[in-house]
Length: 303
Image (cartoon, rainbow, N blue to C red; front, top):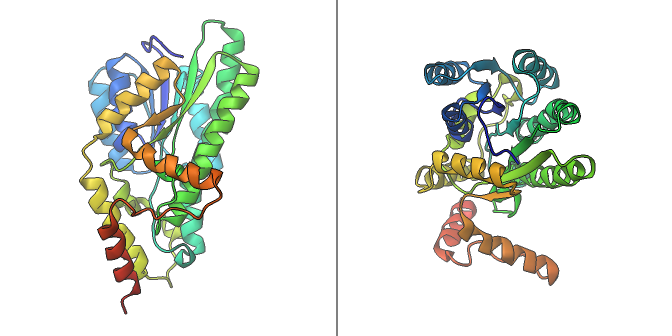
């Protein structure tokens, strides 16, 4: 666990907005060196200027986290400037919805490339650096935080591609935690599972590469409905990205693995676990809000 963050180095993907930017702001206040990585150049430039003005040592780096070569370059640049990082926040993510059979191969490639492989590349690139630093310095402490979602613990309908990507991140993070515990006591891991928080993820299509677009495919009814529902839920969230960022730093300092932005949502996770343990069919996700389920079914079944 990291108790003193001053002069430590943080690498944050998705640093131009949302959780990444808010964690960077906290890091700057704590005196950390900041490696800011984001795919959106204008957002990255704005974040870098703000945090530099706040007194932080900043290394901005434009990156598509799904690209292994770009991530390798990020790792080399970060190590050359600051050495092995102490806090790695594999946070970049995109959203996508719709009935699961209606998603194109490009949808799968884009969402899994960013949400899953972006985390894989972060672990692959920075964990060896951190372990090497730990071997060389008994006082070194490091921590890796991967952003999943409550959709990594639940399976809300009409969000299939996103659910799959986030379940994979939860599994990856739990395995990382166990694997690290086999080889060191100096590097920890956590998984962040936020519920609906206003981070801008509902507008993530703004950064979708042209190579990840299917020119022949138009948004289906289910995808348009899913986008509208997600946007409404995200923008009406009462927990802010800044609140969640503080939860991340609290978890690091206490070596806590699971980070939940909305603890009340765990009741739904418990129901899912009971479904599994009792081998019963999955519970209706709208059981406590049947009007929403009825509205969604009507919309999808209408001509």
